[in-house]
Amino acid sequence: MPNSLPTPAFDDPAHHLRLYQGDCLEILAALPASSVDLVFADPPYFLSNGGITCHAGKMVSVHKGDWDKLPGPEVGPVRARFDKVHEFNTAWLAAAQRVLKPNGSIWVSGTAHVIHSVGFAMQQLGFKLLNDISWVKPNPPPNLSCRYFTHATETIIWAAKDKKSRHTFHYKLMKETNRGKQMKSVWEIRPPEQWEKRFGKHPTQKPVALLERILLASTNIGDLVLDPFAGSGTTALAAMLTKRAFRGIEIDPKWVRVSSQRIKEFSGGELRLSRPNLPNQYSFLTAGAD
Image 1 (spheres, rainbow, N blue to C red):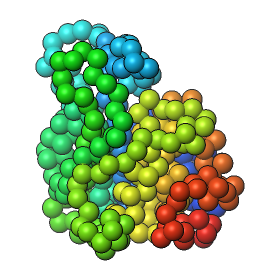
Image 2: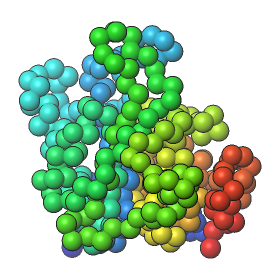
Image 3: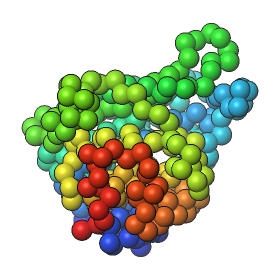
């Protein structure tokens, strides 16, 4: 018997959006089996243990938050640290697989620091790998060490629940939005725009346009979308825009507050005002919730 779900930290019944604060493994265990149509996940990269990054043209220490720290000492055998990361990825992926419907699918985003572990864990758990998307960032931060190529892409793995799954894919819609040509697995999408960062920018925030494409490609109106690492609520906004139901889990109370603020702003009925560049073919998305 699954544990009972906690009281949502945020609930928007009109748009079928619900956000829980807590550990994703505990809350995933409380969700009914085979109840979710699609999972999108952007799990921790575990870079906040002595890693470095480029910010404002300077090399700085990475500190995304406590949620991005690997438990235990910051130094130690590389193999032992990798085993911890892989154990975590295997655990949450198995929990997500349990709640997916038989024909459900999952998208997982990550950099090279974590995505290979995710892909290996998926294969170990029996997911059916469908695509690996290369999300190209037009203006990536420079590589200050000058010892590597500039990191300009992020990988997103798309997989079905298992080998028997008949996953949803709106091929014709993706072709139409790609000017009549088959959409490739290389996507050039700008990082979050200014309006998306109004209440604060999450360290690993994804653009709404990226999540819109994913939901339009692989779900139907009314489907239930789950994000176990909800961050600043981008998946929730994309679900609202595309008329999907949403369940999110976020461990950090700061980002639960930011998500709630963003959802409230969007639910005010001013989606077109917030999204002046929303393509005309998606005008049905701003007609309001059912």
